[in-house]
Length: 134
Image (cartoon, rainbow, N blue to C red):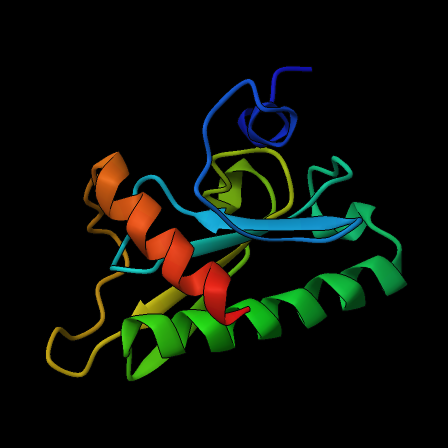
């Protein structure tokens, strides 16, 4: 199986990690919609959330809440959006369950489709700041 998130989990690809426990990781999105855009990912590979056991879905969202609080605090964002897509028709790009935490800022408005590429230095600094809060 060729999965970018599994490669990040195994260390084959770089990730700017924010959080890790026995079953989950959180890291910054490489192509963020806005500053602090993060992903919470179960370590066990499932393509869709409907493939997961119900208690595993609940555990995933416990981590989402924890990471979202830290992202808000570290970035000074005014709010956040959550995104979770299942299948190609839903615009799921990576076929591994993940939840997007997208910080929102009053002065910028809400844009869903615009993404930018941050450099590794910016991502490393922000990842450390959020990780220290968690």
